[in-house]
Image (cartoon, rainbow, N blue to C red; front, side, top):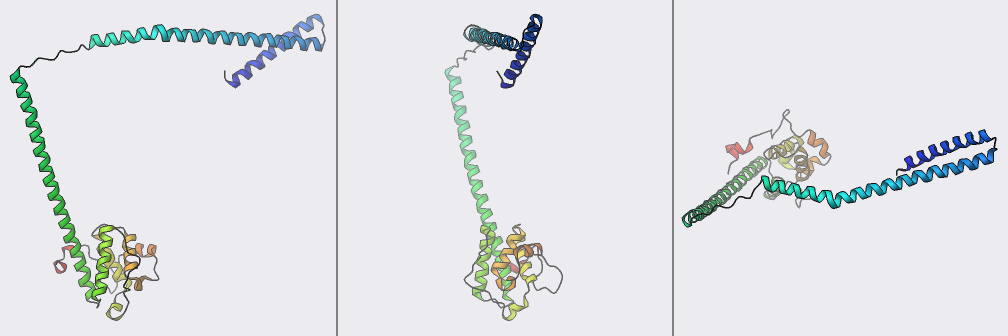
Length: 265
C-alpha cells in the first residue's frame, strides 16, 4: 500500500470517527473526554476493519493467482502447443534413390569447388590491388620529394638539410605526424634568406594538399621543419593563413605538383 494512500485513509477514518463521536455525545449530552474516547475507539474499529479487508483481499487474490499458475496456465500452454503442432505438421523427409543422393553429393562438391576457386581469385586480385596501391603511393611520395628537393636546391639548401626535409615529409604523409625536434637546424642564411614565411607556407600547403591533410598539421610541419622562419608565429595563426597567392613569391601555390613532369624522377 502506498504511503500517501495509507495517510489519506487514516485521515478520512479519523474525521469519520470524530464526526460519529460528536453526534453520539451531542445526543447524550456527554463531555469532551467521553467524546475523545469514543472517537479513538471508533477510529480503532474503522482502521482495524479496513486492515482486515485488505488482508482478506490479498489472501483471496493470492489464492486466485496460485490457482491460475497451477491449473489454468498449464492447460492454456498445452492447448497452444497442440494447436501449433496441428497447424504445422512435421513433413516426412522424401527418401531419395542412391542415384539422386549421388547427384546431390556431386552438386555440393561442385559448389565447394566453385567457392574455393572464387576465393582464390579474390585473394589474387586483392594482392594485386594492394601491390598496385603501394606502388602508386611510393611513386606519389617520390614525386613530392623530388618537387621539394628541386625547389629548395635553387636556394642553396645543403644535402644534409634536404635529407632532413625529406625525412620530415615521410613522417608527415606516411605517419601523419611532424617531428618537433630535428638534429639539423636549417639556418636562414645565404640564398635561403630570399625565402619568406609565405614561400615556405605555400610549400607546406602544396605537400599537404596532395594528401588532403588539415591546415593545422601543415602549419606544424612548416614550423618544426623551418623554425628559423616561423619562430614568432603560432600554429593557429599560420593555419588560418597558409595559402598566399599575392606578392613577390618564389614558391607559388600549385595544386598539381605530382602531375608536373618537371618534378618526376
